[in-house]
Image (tube, rainbow, N blue to C red; front, side, top):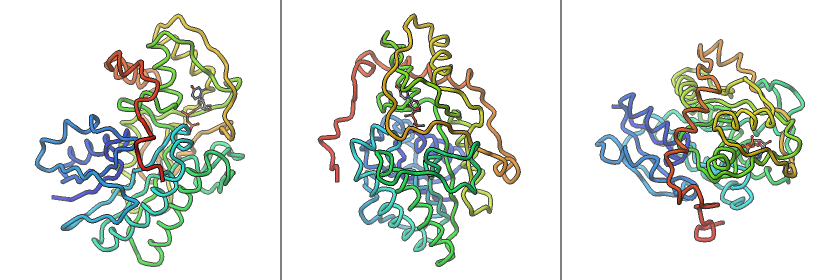
Length: 328
Ligand code: UDP
């Protein structure tokens, strides 16, 4: 039985990865410090014999007994609001956490994958973004803590690959959505859906002309799995190229949810990228992968999930109290 360590396992993507690797017959070691993750995302896996949960912060030395075949480092805050609240943790999990896990992968001779991001392209001047584009990132802006940690993460991973011969994979994930997103993490999909469910107006930032390209989680996980199992070691974009402006997107959500609320406009956050769309030529050619779930189907499934949340969960502005965690 293959043994796989997944960090950030109680988070949105991490928990879906746990499901996938369990379905593939792996023994899964799930690791999370639960700052932004939530055990309810993986509680259905807890009774399984081939599933273990380690409550651990990967910025500290990581010990896992026995052999490991794969390590997937998916631990990181991943929303602009989180970066503002826990900037130092964000930097550390990308930098120190990655270093610790690379050391572990080297020791165990495990294949190592990091979750990189479209954010490494910053506010891109090349559109759509191919993997060869170096990006346009403000190192000291509010998103810099995430963007630069992720850029460092790619560099150190390639250094371990080239210097130590470590078997590595780098996936650049574009905006992904689906069940188990955190309702109040400030990202646009949970924000709009939460607002619709609470009967509030939808807050579009700026004039809403900025674009994003949203990928349904099942497609994203399939692409990640295929990349891990391939022998491709350079960074690869995995995302859905179907691009939309945020204003059009808000209008779609109003239709989907049947809310009679309207759109209101709020200031655009600093360094908010104006456009984003993955060039997925490489994923198509090398992995034979492309997204299958259209936005209307994906959004419907996601809205079904948010509708299952209790009124209490829905009303809480932020159910995470960051003052109680180690913010350093
Ligand atoms: N956004 C918005 N209203 C919200 C939350 C986000 O208009 O309530 C916008 C945000 O300014 C950005 C886009 O939606 O242009 C996507 O934001 P998100 O935080 O989901 O992810 P990003 O791609 O910016 O990391």
